[in-house]
Image (cartoon, rainbow, N blue to C red; front, side):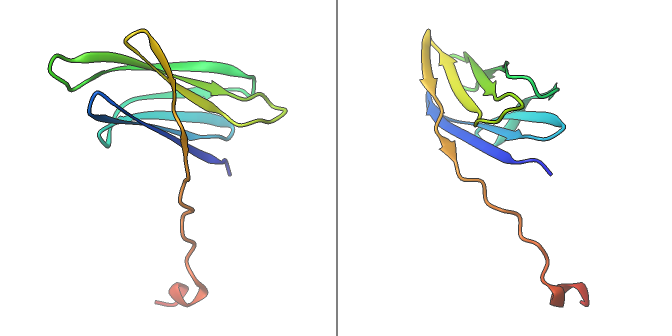
Length: 109
């Protein structure tokens, strides 16, 4: 089972969130205001950078890119950077709530 990471930033009045699930295949998703706008799958355990792009629903619309730096097989933590208007802004990591496992009493109901 892989580990999950979330990164979040506010930009131009929009909520920008990156979800990352590490495992055999690394799955990335980009959310703007809670809606998925881009997704990617990265195979292998080599260190690399994945880039996802989208347009924010602002007036006028603004294009952004999100760079996700994935660690190699020897470990490390991923990082995410928001690229907008010629600026690079690190996206802080957010705590990922653990999914609740059913209690033994729930198995019998």
